[in-house]
Image 1: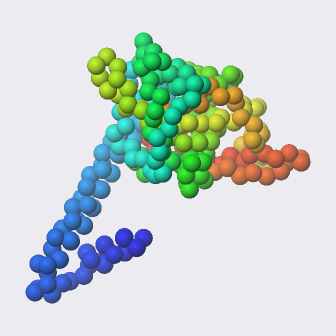
Image 2 (image 1 turned 30 degrees about the vertical axis):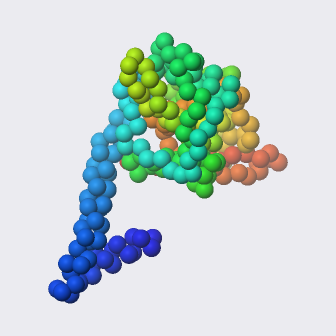
Image 3 (image 1 turned 90 degrees about the vertical axis):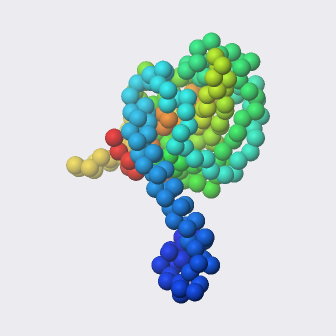
Length: 253
């Protein structure tokens, strides 16, 4: 906010004629930075339409956007993470969905670990960041059992993002960029709604702190994330439950 107010004051300040030339380099840099920001917003708006289709429709593994992170920005903290044996095995299974023939040996054990990502006005946090209130996501990815991926599923599931993992993979003499959200999925209960909201939609309630087993579905491409939701914990009939309040997207299809 301090930087924003500083730049705004500099833009609006009328320098005396004899001083203007001394500050021209500074004011020109501010205008150039704003111009680049405006161009990035236009690019993100174009990509957002296709990304929204990818997260809502059935998975088409041949879509080139799975192999690109254009338009995404990555938030700190950033560290280098070493995948353990299970993480490496399950992540390798996800890669083979999009790159058939890829072997476990082709997947690097080291990856970049980020706290948050942003795309076209949407920001997703994790428990690894201060944006942990944005760590709750909805997505069509996880199957009902054993932590497996269900690429045909149109069932929107709830999860908590622990961090974001970024990889570059060499495949058939090409380099592909991937980013996955490392997610704990809430166990799949029957759907319940709390109370009678009349003409309004009553919030869903789920069992709190009960998660699916760790598996390939724990790694979801960021392009597949549908939206955030606000999680509210409370007691209903002496049981701690999770109230689900989905957030509207900044850009709609």
